[in-house]
Amino acid sequence: MIDIAGIIAEDFLNIAMITLGGVLISLGVHFVPVGGAPAAMAQATGVGTGTVQLAAGAGLTGLVTAGFMMNVTDNMGLIIASGTIGAMIMISVTMLVGQWSYVYGVGCPPASAKVKYDPITKDRQDLYVSQGTEGHGIPTASFVSGIIGAGLGGLGGSMIYFYLLSIENGLPEADFIGIASIFAIGLFFVNAVIPSYNIGGTIEGFHDPKFKRFPKAVLASFIATFLAAIMGVVAIGGM
Amino acid sequence: MEPLTSMGILALMGAAATIAGASEDLESDVGSQSNPNSQVQLAPQMMYPHRIYNKAVSGEPPSNALMCAIGGTTASVLMSTGASVMLALTIGSIIAAVIHGTYSVTSYIGRTASQKRFKQPLYLDLIRTHTPVIMGYAFITTFCILVVSYLMITAMAHPFPLPLLAFIWGIAVGAIGSSTGDVHYGAEREFQNVEFGSGLNAANSGNIVRKAESGLRNGIDNSWFCSKFGGPVTGIAFGMVVFLTGWITVVFDPSISETMGWEAIIAGAVIVLLLAIWNRKIEVDARKAYGPYKKDEEEVAA
Image 1 (tube, chains in turn red, brown):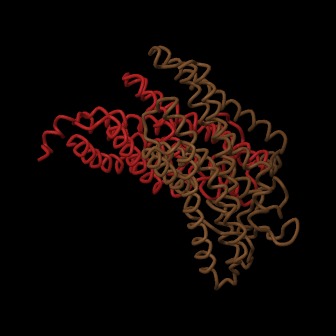
Image 2 (cartoon, chains in turn green, cyan; image 1 turned 90 degrees about the vertical axis):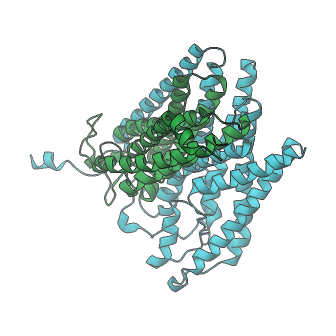
Image 3 (cartoon, helix red, strand yellow; image 1 turned 180 degrees about the vertical axis):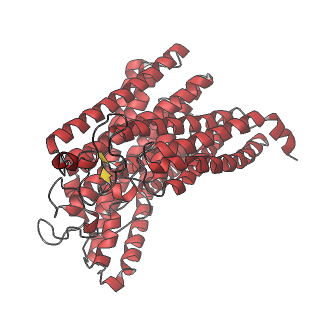
């Protein structure tokens, strides 16, 4: 018989930190500039793919780098920092190459339709938005926002992975890593999906009015991740 | 491991990833998948029936993750029975490609049949000519991703199991493909009937180009065009992701000392900063080269 209350009491710090990781992912997804299907036709500002897909792609790349770092060191700061940097590199490369496609392949300069001036470069935006579109490409504000978002996603994902792997149990190491990483991926998807209801397909980054809705998604993620963390910790701790 | 050997392995991984990225994008162009397919799907409803293969198994990241996970699992099982690595990775990729081909055919037939009321014909010869091409690209993508994952596990001592690593790289290659190369297909190739650089007015939605350089346009024509820009840039993007995320820890090996680990993090931050500066430069240059779409009304009024 598994001592559920005992495991929860013993690993409460892990549950709390996993929940915090989930909340960070949820917040991070709001920063990632995604234009969904309209952006793939250069009809909206941001990267031309879905919220969950891009956030997951970046965050999971961070998980790969964090997993590698965890294999060679047990310094928590280093592991989490490597997850953050891995995700940031992935999204920077994706946004930059996406920008090549918009500028060289489609012939549209980057422009935001949500603000008149870019909050970082102070460049005029509305004049560069082509007729009948909601902007195109990735202006500097969206690029910086994307880096912050992927960084938070990578940070949250690697935190979840680190604290899942800190649970004591009797599993062989290879199985333990497999289960912890699958669980981290699962929690990543949960927390990437919840904010996408807020975003509703497109968001340009922190300067987009939709960004202000993030507290609701963060609260929802907090509840969902907390319950999932309890289940995960009990399942892994009871093995 | 010797730093030079690690760099060699990393270069091999980067090369395999570049091929995987390019073939992933071209596979999605032949079959028309992901976001640009919304226009192919919409066209018959706007009275523009076409001869383009219309498959959207799912978004690109889940469909590639599925392919790679199937390939990785099959290869893992085969290797555990003592099969050679090359054989295991090849058979794993073949099985993944066959399953992807099955999904492609069923989704093409299903989607086209559902558009009967809009008089969209179902071309059986498209299934015969396009499906093997889709499966061929799917094989190349899966095989290259499996090579990257296998090298990470055996040579770089990554702790994740092969199917899981293949799954993660499948998600990443799909996310990159649908963010980069698809824009060339969706915003340029599908709408060559509007002036280059004029932007795509939402009112033109569904009015995709249906005539090819010769005859009616099909998915293979689209992959021919996208192989000149969309495919290669997707390959560069995925190759860069795999190479750069590995490069920082190969050059600054964290297993030597923790200080080296922190140096790897700083190197990564510098790379991100350089990419952001590069992006800003492209933005400024593009605005200067193309100019604004409309005049400044405030200035005109003054």
